[in-house]
Length: 259
Length: 356
Image (cartoon, rainbow over all chains, first blue to last red; front, side, top):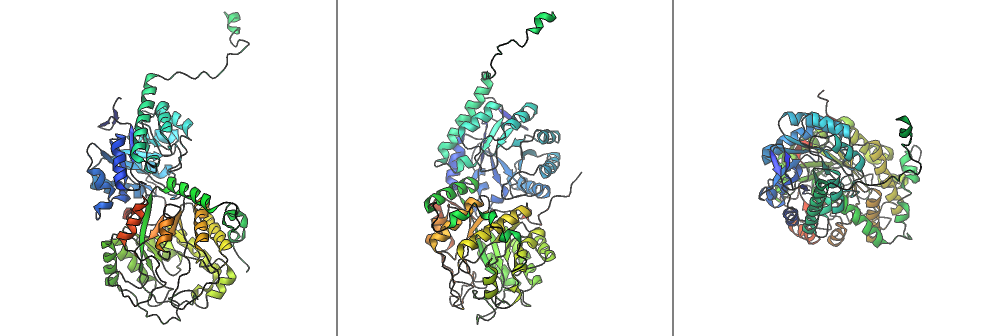
């Protein structure tokens, strides 16, 4: 596969993993390895410097070939997200920040206004900003304009497993975007990740579907294959859909009389 | 009783869940458990958030018939001073606790607002997350606590049945049923991020009580869209004073109630404390409950030097230490999460001032 470029970083894997929700750290690490991912996201709130046994950050930082992308999950407004980004950079040394701002802790939908404000500030400070956003084509362009490194529209709400409910909007975002478009949230099965790649997404981010599978490493490997298949299919040129029937009375016969 | 809010009386708002709670419900406990498990897994994953309570003071001015700290009990009264609070918290932190619930009785001159705020300030310097379960406050006071690092307020209505409420609150500031109903809203108006509510199960007819709690959560969620909400399921435990609950809440009913709440409130945090037995807690982990207290002491202080003779607010039923408890969770492939918060997210719930 071609490499994905984000800022000055390149990745050969197009699968990004979320690291929450796993039943234990060992299965999370096994899943990360089995997925072949090179970029994983970890919530600042799960950094636990006092007890390294329970610290997702230390565990992940020890893995070779993995770039960490801290996220601001828990932030409810731009101010908190910006502060969280600063602390994350200080602790992890990573220039990546996944901006997640959900003012409603129940459905965890991203706040477009606060997200925009935070991204503008953080991109200006040189972060590689990866915002988790509603699948809104206008917001996506606004975020591109302020210097985000990618946009991460949701397929459906976090943990819902409802797949690409926003497919139409994501297609529009991909069509208009000059930065990587990464579907984040809602994917339940590898076939949905494959579909996202066939649509032309640069990459997908998966967490719940792998973390809560009966066998997380096996599911991670399955997602990796699906992402690769979708990407190759898109690159190979997918046969167009022939949907509309040919009209029985010609639609263009008038052209014969106009010439 | 006149003046009851519509959300409390309008049974339509809980019509979807009511059939699941009836004893003669056609929906089996097993199928409810399976549905609750599926929702919990996808929304919350294989994790359990953990916290521990710290009783700051057991001075109290209320006459709650069911409470071991009611003002007519002969329990020794004391409060922790600042240094003691610090030491207790540090000792809890050594056990791995990063999320603390600070408790007091009703407002008294021994434990009033300034005292509580001081304790919150100390705690937020030590713990990642600080919540309180204390006396009702006004909006300004809640706001000041949010500014000091308090992100959660737990306040139980105890019972949503006005008649029972009147009988059980024999004297003191807690006697006003309608005023008590408003307290969670005051906290949310002040920008407290998460409000925990619940009924003390056993004080009133359990099915109707459960539905009223459910309607309360739904009302809060609609009215305060930023509100983090959690529901606890405290069952009456033996306590000093020997109060016997009028209504029995069986393990089967409590399990059914928790499953039904997970189905009716798929995103809301559901909490189970050490009032419940190890077997019940282990069994319910992964089936709807997403937050548990651990290694709890219900005496004032008690982490530093547990006093075997002192009586707490109620008898703890699950007295396993952190390590043993976590082993049980791990055996179920559930990750115990001690730290799931970051102090940068403290402060009142508001939108940012726009930077323009």
